[in-house]
Amino acid sequence: MKMIFTAVFLAVFSLTTPVYSGGSGIKALDYEACRLLVQEGEILSMTELMELVNRLSEGKIIDTRLLQDEQSYIYEMEIASADGMVNMLYVDARSGVVTDPVTVDNK
Image: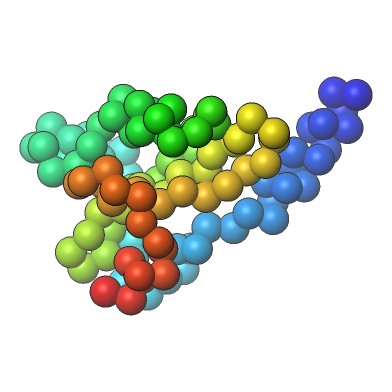
């Protein structure tokens, strides 16, 4: 049974491709850049993100990337929901407001 669940999870996970991958003018920042931005008070910390996700759903964060376009910082998060589905969640890294990736991409 566990192998079936793992196979289904991996199949679903492979189908959820990030909206921002390969986008023009948008880059993923590394750990060091994230750490510095959190220290400077520019963006929310991982602890704050986990609290936000806990308020929004019963899901768990699988993976998080910090993305930057010209003027915005966006957290792109993969969330595993209680029913086993993996969803993408985009959050403004400064305000914590859930955002639509299409509107962010069009800035």
